[in-house]
Image (cartoon, rainbow, N blue to C red; front, side, top):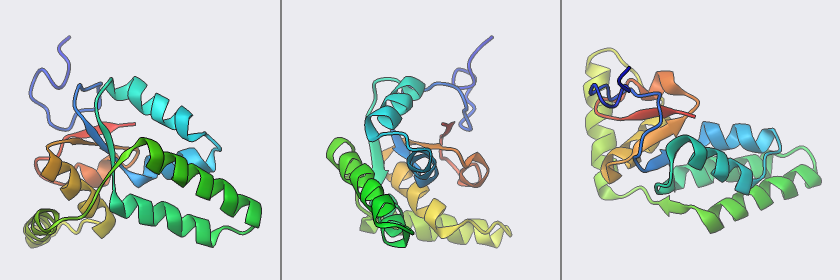
Length: 154
């Protein structure tokens, strides 16, 4: 049986040899499950292969938000360690002018069709489109509504 990538399906859930922007949902779930940063990076590599793994600067903000919302100092410390280790091992792509234009165009086009995308997902998806990367996520439904974006379920 041909893989979905081989038959041209850009909504792929199989292993791709394409660099990925990892969605916050994957990292939040890993951190909450007490998976270490090396373990989560290893699991992502196992799923997508030896390709570039990147996060959007918005993902840093989302993870840092959890540090300041932690109910205990110990949980805050653990979350800080997870984020600091992640930043040491994964490239961070900023939201650029190009990203902003992609966000505006896709957001407006989809809204005109009655499709309202969560802004955070649109930002992360636009980051991936700008780079020509796939998005690796546990939230396939929302990312599948971004035209032209390759989505990998992690």
